Length: 197
Image (cartoon, rainbow, N blue to C red; front, side, top):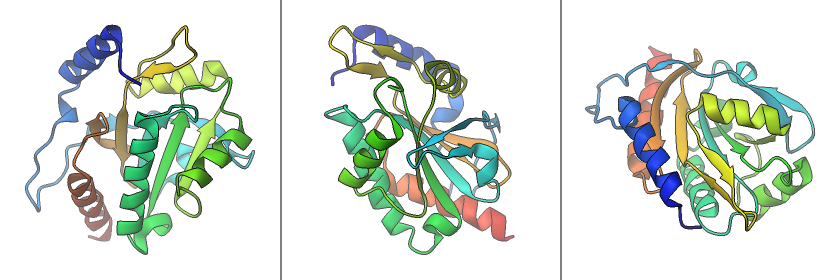
């Protein structure tokens, strides 16, 4: 789905307001710390509850998608699924990917289960989350994500993926879906090395 002018304007404002979105660390440079990652407790695709605090001790990538998205969300999910495979034994054990829907009215746990299965994003290391509209609106806003349902039923939303370290600190964010997966892999490994020092 092509972003609207309003969506692009919000994305521009967010990228200007949050300078930490762009980072260029050296190979051994420590990633910046933005602040405490916004907490959440939402419903999993299996019907349970998962809080960010439950993942303490792991590096967590938090992103926002919705299941009926026909273009950009599947691309982002595929990119993350490929990254998870490249992480090898660290994925699941030390690294988790969390995808939060921006369409909670339609994205029930069952719908998210089907979406995850269809896009190769199942198993240890993955969590797809939904909640009430109020819960989703709150967590999206606190992560800097704009989301608005269109007249067609699509959801215009900011594509923003955030890395949270083992201690629950927000370390870096990637705007859009065209970020370099090799850069994110380097950042994940950097955070893993921090935890092993």
